Image (cartoon, rainbow, N blue to C red; front, side):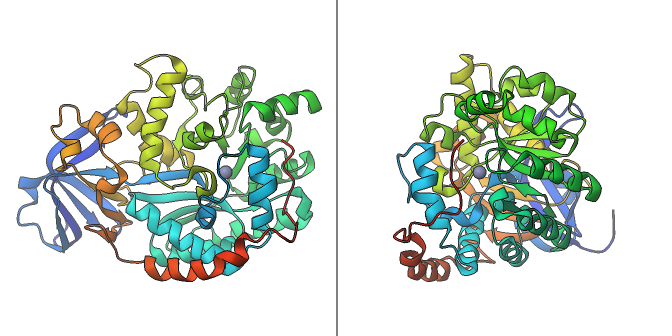
Length: 450
Ligand SMILES: [Zn+2]
């Protein structure tokens, strides 16, 4: 062990760890030593006594988890939270969201991103995969607030070739920025808004530049049915034909993934992952959810997500974890699928893999980036603890997160945000809302036609 003081020492907590089979376990009365933004060691509290550290956190009564990862969102859409309620997908897009998004300014995106990052840090989210517009602005907010993010500039084919070029330029310019906290992806919107030609060009660019791709596909059964009747193939087969399954591909939702897609996905030469955001599926009354059991059977990681707050109403990944477990049990008709430990595996290593960071985050172990959250389990709703995994998934809430750390830097301490000023953001955003939500112009940025 080095003789210079550690940067951060967290003592007295229980630490969620993974064994060499990736089984979830808990180290009691442990200490975490952080140096240069990484976990140097996970040791016993007794061994950490007398260890010098620049900053110390006494975390008795708390559990240290790898920071949660939001594997698919549109962070600035928090500005539209609650604006399009109780609508079918088509009306949600065409009558509200896409008309309102035609008013979006850089400032709206900036304020939305700030509010979103504040919400996520408060909920124990340390990394998010964002898919939106004006992403230079989102990258600037991420740089400033200290989170980790996987960012992609979204585009439709209706923007012409400039959309695709802008997405590439963004990905190349920001890759590895914010001291490595920002990674990037190419971000076509979806197979129903991006042509086969553009999808194929995106696959080429991804391979040429070593970039991953993040997009929506087979979001629901309707999209799969429409694709079959128009093209004779499913959305996943459209991706395959375009060459996208040879890239490192993050697919949002996939509730419309059908049995015939599974061998296609299994044969893929790229790393394929799916992000699941079950609250939105329930809210839109989609008939299916992400087929996690079938995807796991062919080795595809499924990360947890919230989608944007205009559909999900929150960016609470903790809730996505609990809902994923419940919806899977209900859909499969099997209380043994998906267990709390499985839910925690999705929330940690599988989510890290989904955003291409499976080797650097997603577990608390020597050498990993120090993205850690401390959860207080002393509240009445989390006591007593017979099964810590169950307590975390089904009893604890995101509001029980007391401290959020990214790359060894404390972004929230004892529920106090250290890098963002929420009242100021809310005030400024509030002044802009009338102009943002105005739909009298009759414009929309795109048309939804599955
Ligand atoms: Zn989405």
